[in-house]
Image (cartoon, rainbow, N blue to C red; front, side):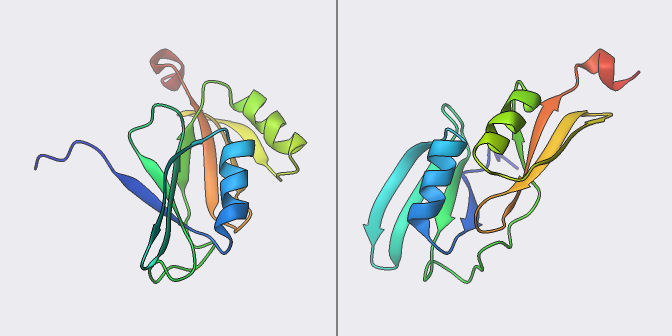
Length: 128
């Protein structure tokens, strides 16, 4: 196997413009692709410098239903500050909680796709 990384993760959304505002204005992602195709709008966003991007898949772009994506982990250097920013933007956040692998919180995007924030534990902290 010669796999080097994941290219993209599909996030099914009902309204691509609404999702775009959430991922760029609230999460701070950047647009990496915004193209009109015969099948519909190909819209991708990502954190600055990330190898893996998120495809905001609207109606007609595959057999996806908004809100069905789950367990998408976003690593952050400061989960507490990011949770505060999400709360200020009106996003309901669960956590953050201390876990053996780090400090973690969860939330959903406007379509109900499940996302998590994680500040990873330092190796010495994880074994305590």
